[in-house]
Length: 238
Image (tube, rainbow, N blue to C red; front, side, top):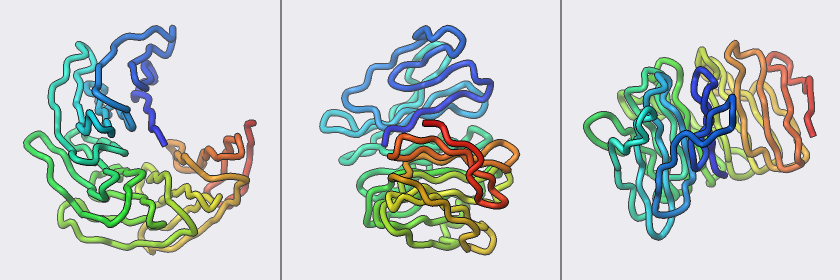
């Protein structure tokens, strides 16, 4: 799964290039040495993080949006970067690698939070940056405390966990998995509240800002809008 992101003011969308939403014009291009697997804007809209994973490039880049200048290049060899996420205060980045490393990158260095024995598909911070969640190909979703590196809990799924998201208040966690299910968890209790069946692998999940709705994208070519409180599918977009 290749991740994309939109800045907080919805003015730009990032893929391999940075695009202006209003016009679709390419505003910046940043050359990489191989496949770009993940991208994300910082919440203050000042920086863009991109992660490459391939034979010729295994680095995380932090790019200044206004100029397109690469401010930092953080090696993640030999595996590269599969997932990136900014903390809400834009001071930290989390990365996940196909080698199973979940790292925190701050202004000084890259620090490995945990080493798993599986490809890390997705990472996400809680709003207060105290929690980090990761989904991986060993069918597990895990939540860690950033400050202590302690694992709060983990829950197994029926197949790869492809996407994870925390609600704005960090009370709910959503996961999308290759077992064709999206799940909504109570973060404090560590238990599943809702399971939403899909017709294909669930590749993407995202909460609305108020936490009342969850959007999912799946291999059955449908985007669904789910009511978090009930688990009911309110809309489907083919």
